[in-house]
Amino acid sequence: MLETKEINALFTLIDDPDEEVYHTVSNRIIGFGKDIIPNLENLWENTLNETAQDRIEMLIHNLQFSDLIQSFKDWRDSAYNDLLSGALLVAKYQYPDLHTTPILQDIEKIRRNVWLELNNYLTPLEQANVLSSIIFNYYNISGGEVNYTYPEEFFIHKVLESKKGNAVSNGILYQIICEQLDINARIINIPKQMIIAFYHRDYNPEITETKPKEKILFFVDGVNGRAYGHLDIENYFKRISVPSVPAYFKPISHKRIIQILLEETSKCFDKTANLYKQEELLQLANLLDD
Image 1 (cartoon, one colour):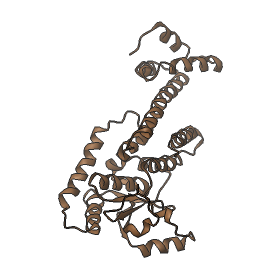
Image 2: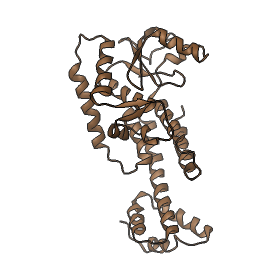
Image 3: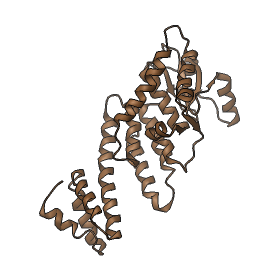
Image 4: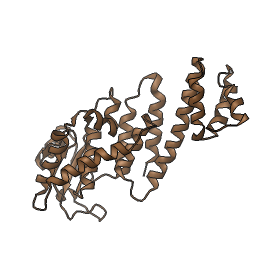
């Protein structure tokens, strides 16, 4: 823990009733950065004043959030924007002390079990069936429509723990496993859905492509791993009265996927007491604008 006379003096003023004094004190404390968090945690444990405890909790949150902002900027500016790393950063918003090693191990177990069932003679549809069977049957991960009363269904480590996700989180997990196995399948921009398109092996979205739909073999629903054909997707567009344009069939970037995850998660925090969380999640989402 950091130890200075200034820190001790600032801590004596945390419960000052004068808001202007507290504002100055909190800014000075935050200026020390995340290294002061252990001091604040120790102070919280030895404080009986509820007002002071609430202020300490918010100071810790603000310090963790400031650190998370920098982590998102680093992820955004990295060369690859690894999808799993982005999903873990979103989870760290709600669970700042999250240890990622067990999650990486769980993901590796899924990847390995799928890999053991694959071979060079399987068609892409057979590969998809193996992948869906391992995730949704062997590991019993279930999914449903997005429900904003259950924020834990958006956090990848909670999905792995509880075996319960939603269209967004399950779709992200599905794409992560595909990428780790070099399967050419990506989430696409179909409205109000988290659909994974399985492309021809030679399709490269980085190369100019005016008709990406023609490169798609079939589609997989992120909720449950069910496969769909082109006719199913065309019927969906007709049902929602939206024209089927090429942009909907291009893979969306990792940054945009994580941005969607942040935006959707923010909708879970619409109560007055939690509106600050909604605003912060949207602030993180805005960092990822192209």
